[in-house]
Image 1: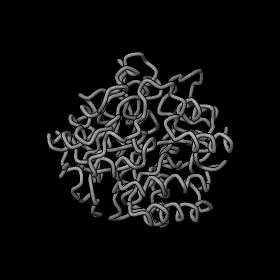
Image 2 (image 1 turned 180 degrees about the vertical axis):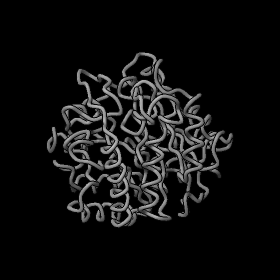
Image 3 (image 1 turned 45 degrees about the vertical axis):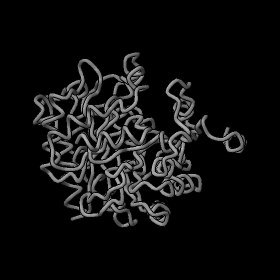
Length: 372
């Protein structure tokens, strides 16, 4: 059953034991100041123990505080955190999964900077960011490269550049947030130049170490990035050496729109975006977005819509998902509730560590006693 789902795949050098990955999911588990906490280690041990082939650790900043989303954003910008990152990589690998560190600059969504930095001074949630100077952009590209080398030094198996969710790299590509009049703004070829430069700097720094990319296919905004432009951008990333593309849709400015909220409750709601990008590139493509049934995951692989399946809240709600699917016990899966009140997201927005309302009662009581 599900032969494709549990078959191996080579990605940028390493071989994944199956087609399941843990997609990056920010839960606020890092310590204050972005340290590797015991809570973070325990969480990723459990995720790696689940049976997935690859665990992608979420959203480690390359530039604190200017690029940090919050004070609980993991830091990859300093050697002071190198020992903690090494412990994190080892914790994942000891449970049988490969370890990947996602690195990021939040740009206009940096909660630690006032004003935040961005390609252009486009207002967001009541704040107007300051447009980056070219010298600052060069510095940020170098910080991405240094953070990637830090991930390699710490023992991670690969690194992922965060070009999704409306963060800095995605902000440069978007016609909505990039209104520059220099060589980094205007037509797509110029808007994509900075992220491609970041990828090039990173690859120069880490050599043959695999560098994946969290890829924004559609912002789901009328004046934002759409598939007609993200497709050629995907081809450019693949041609520039991206090891894989992990495809997503939406930004903080579109996630709350009624049509996007409705879409996000559907099974496999981002799979069509992955399929559209998969048709354009020859590197592995990850599909995610409420893929909570083995038959759905297998079908997406069989139809050639993706090469890998990304599980985030699905795996967080039930770390036994892999075993239950493989053993034909899918009726026992504890599922993330699409009709829930989004408690996890609300906690994260308040700067608190998140919990899942689907967890067993005893685990919820223990959690609330410690963190509520």
